[in-house]
Amino acid sequence: MKTPLLILLLLPIISFSQKFPLNDAGQIEYTEVVTVDTAKAATLYNRAKHFFANNFKNAKDVTVVDDASAKKITVKKMLPITMASEKGDKSPFGVLLVTTTIESRDGRYKYSIKDLYHEHYRDGINLSGGKLENDSPVAVLSKDAFNKVKLSSEEQVMKYLMTLKINMQTDATKSVQKDW
Image (cartoon, rainbow, N blue to C red):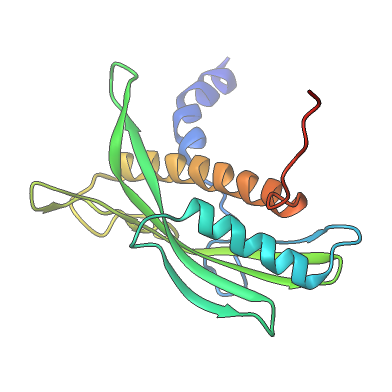
């Protein structure tokens, strides 16, 4: 009888503990080599450029590296973070800053999403969580709120990653003829 009660008491703690992928340096990094049969490195590089051009219209999204000869692009991106209220509706709660790198080779590409940092200011007050690897936020944000930021951040990164993979698999630059 004590075991089920203990599990029920620990469930909220367990549900908020994030298991972000960590690289050898202990930093959060989503990375994968994705196979795209018959696609040349130049094609994949152009798909990455097209993806970034169409999805990063904000002036604060900065291309850090664009090396056509190495088929490598690195950008800094801001993903919106939302926080659910007690009523269940979501409202903006800052941004997640991420660095994305795509390196292309014939038949495959490698992506890396890292440097995840939550930033939020409201009425001149710093409510930033900081690096998501940290156990505690860097500002006045509560640890509970920081855990919620981490959950929202993970959701946003997964959506972003899904969009990236879809765009890298198909040539979105070609127009599609429709039957009349």
